[in-house]
Length: 489
Image (tube, rainbow, N blue to C red; front, side):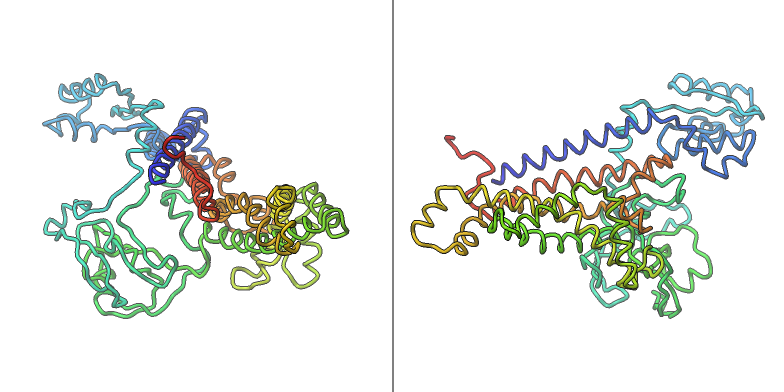
């Protein structure tokens, strides 16, 4: 079994690599890159050399190319910086020739200054993404010329809450591993994923921060900072990262350079918002759909079974958007809002309509399959044998048929739970829910390349590994199932 799991994990990683690499190639080569800048108001206002420099800098930031200004070239490849910066000088021409020989394209600004750029090919684009993806923080991560005496060590010490935490000096993050009261309670900043920055929406923000950062107003509370001063602040001190230049306000609060902190927000992040709706509706769908399917199978062709079939056909045939408007037109008469932002995260009524709709959309499939599996098992030899032994119909269904029929349903449970993170595009759009459901299509429409790649990575990884978890859960439920062949088979 251990060998089988390792092989499946390896195959899963290869699958994720191929899927994401194909998407990277499509995003960076099939979409005209000039369109990426069209929605940037700052770019449209610029003219001349400033516009050109902004454009190539942004292309470099987004991963299209390696872009070097004249001062960059002179700094990297000249022993006489001042002479190199003089247009037409021998040193200047020498450095330009060096970059031409490296395969860079040389162009000139209106003021005569040269600049160089190298556009990445498909293989370079894919390589740059994967080689930067995993970031491991360490004591040598920060190289600050203004702080040459920075101590470099990893140590265990109590944090501001008096709880032991793995801390670091010289790392990007001050807290590498820490505990708090937020799920999953143990958190780490030691290993992170770098998907680049978001652009043009929320330009400059880290892609993962856009997905995982809270929403709404900041939560301001009395906060005791490392210097001992207590002030009203929304800072999450566990997210403290290194800040090269600290001002007077920072010195008043922090006793070191770890003065950059994220804020606490009153509302969940987009990923958590989708997960809340998805998980609640999933629990309700299983709690209602499985008993309904069992009841239908035990009363085949009777009124309850026919009524269930009508429900399945009706919900399946009805367009999702029509079901949304139908349910919304009913529940709005009971004081339930037709848009999520009207009452917001704190009012339970905001969750009622979307949860009902997601539950109704999930139930028909569960009811259909559990009914079908149980009816198939009803004709098995072991059922006839159980009847011959005199077992009641209830005992046969609950102790024998259900145990076997539930196995395929169990296989899909991990995937259903994990993929709740993806949200529901139509439901979130109809109710204006700030979740992840509409993030991928919105990112595609806005040409937010890094966000698209990040979401594809997340969804593909979750989908692939959920299949593996489903298989393993199936083995736990029924030990008779063997995922790998035994020796001699």
